[in-house]
Picture 1 (cartoon, helix red, strand yellow):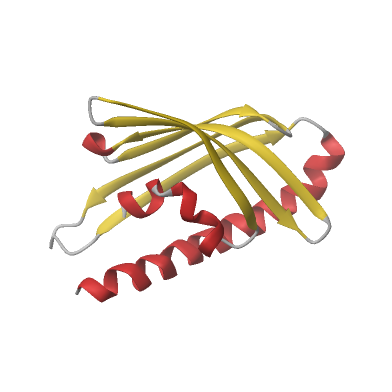
Picture 2: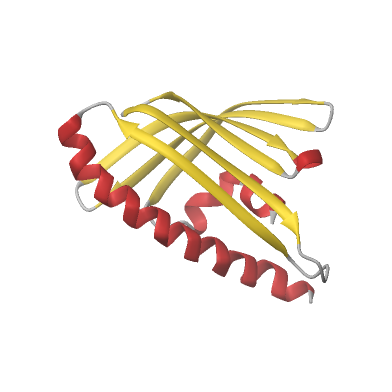
Length: 136
């Protein structure tokens, strides 16, 4: 699951409302990777692009995302992955905290983002089923 989430360039293929994703830089050191990427999300007539720093740490089964630029006052999210007892699969924990700079945009986009995050969960589960059920 770490690899599926870490493959951010594939997000437009399966994440609803993710219209584009461009990785601008990639640095690797000591088994960890630091990416800077733009993600464009859209819902109906609203389109927003924001830039984040994505820190992939497979040794700790953790992905941290920090906000750089876009319509937010702040944005932070974190993925952690832990093996389940029977060794078949893992638990995925996702945390996100964000606030829009513009209050009006926040009201309009906030609803869209809440809907998007629920749809993202379903999309990741379906993507995992699609990719990993082939290997079972």
